[in-house]
Image (cartoon, rainbow, N blue to C red; front, side):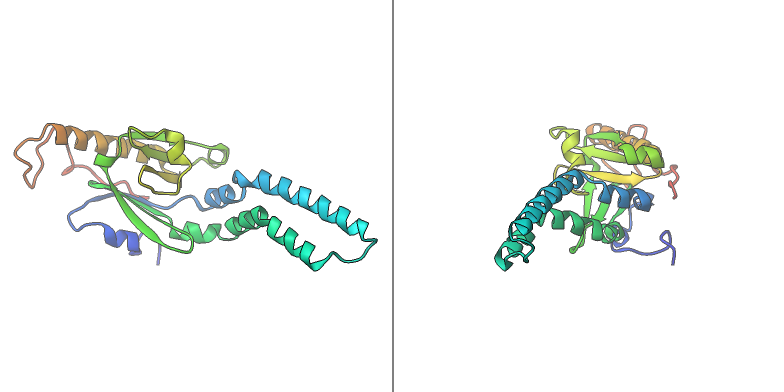
Length: 221
């Protein structure tokens, strides 16, 4: 069954009266490469080289004898930053499988997680800024991130948090980043304006300020 036609847990969270404008997942190649070449990589390499040189010196001081078991266990524990990095790389595909994004006329749905699995929804009323972020790997592969933050939170904090959080969220590594950026910006503007200047006492069919949800089409992937 293809991704487009599958019914995921995140898709089941969307209300019956909501219209889905876009649904997607990160670019698989970019997501995995960013999981490998993450900020922890140089730190893990330096840590491994330092510990390896110390272990080599300790081994030479014993005239070729094996290292003491206690010392070996100490180094195994001391290499914890390296193990953390390697675990992140080994499980990056699992995180990718759990990651999905949906944009509706009510808000943005995101799912993610490594060992646990979470599905959350952010209404447009909680988000105030929409930006595009493109790292080096994003630019090489032609993808980008759509970063959404509150008015009190700097953009870089939202980019460096998990996929979703209380302060904002990032739609990462998507091919249609420009279209999704324009879509969310338009929805946010319409909903904010209609909330500030409501007409018709909020009827079933919205006649608010320049809102066109009845005539808008969906953005398919």
